Image 1 (tube, rainbow, N blue to C red):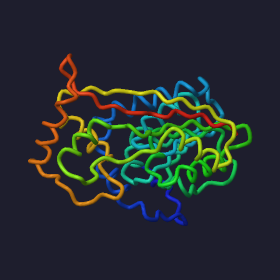
Image 2: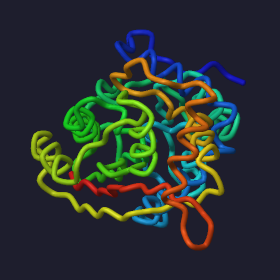
Image 3: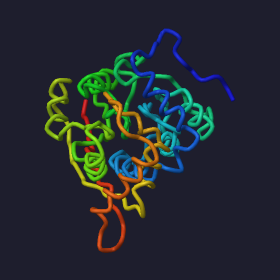
Length: 267
C-alpha cells in the first residue's frame, strides 16, 4: 500500500481528542455505522448520476464507504479526514486508482482555491466549533459553478439519550447540536447565498439503550465537547438503561431520534 498523501505543511491543532476517538474506532466503524450510511445515501441521491471527469472532495471520508461510491460514479476522489487511521481504512477499501488521501481539518483545508467540482461531506461538520468556518472553506475550494453536498446533525438529536442521562447526573454525556436556523446563519456568515436545505427526522430502533451507546462508541462519536466529570461506570450505564425504558414503543423497541440537515450549496 502506498504512503498516504499527508501534507507536511499542514498541522492539525486542537483536534487531537476528536482525531484519537475516531482513530480508535476506525476498525469497528463500519459495523456500527448503519445510520451514517443511511444519511450518506440520502445525500448521495442529490448528486448527479454520472461524475465522470469531475474532481470530488470527500470531506470527513471516514472509512471511505462513500468515497468508493463516488469513485464508482466516475469521479476522481480526494479522501480527506482528521483521523489517520480512518484514512488507512479508506485506502484499504478504495485503493489508489483515481484516489488520493489527505489528512485534513475541515476548518483549514490544505487545498487551492477552486480545486474541486464537487465537495461531499456527510456527518462530519458537526465536529467543528463554528459551522461557518468549514462552510467558508468548502466555498473557497469549489470551482465556479461547483456544488457542495453536506449533512450535519441538528438540535434534538439523541434527545432520548440526553433525557435519560439527565435523570442520572447533571453532567454532559451527549453532545449539543446547532439548530436549523443556526445552519442558515452559518451559511450567511460564509457568504453562501445559493443553497437548498431540508431537515428530515430519522429514528433508529434498538432493543436496548446499551446497543445505542455501543454504536456511538463503535463509530468514535463518544467524544463529548466540554465534557465534565460524571458517572460513566457500569452502574451508571445500568441506570441509564432503566431511565431509557420510558421511551420504549408499543412494538417493544427503543428509539434513537436524529434531526438531520441535508444541504446543497451552489457556487
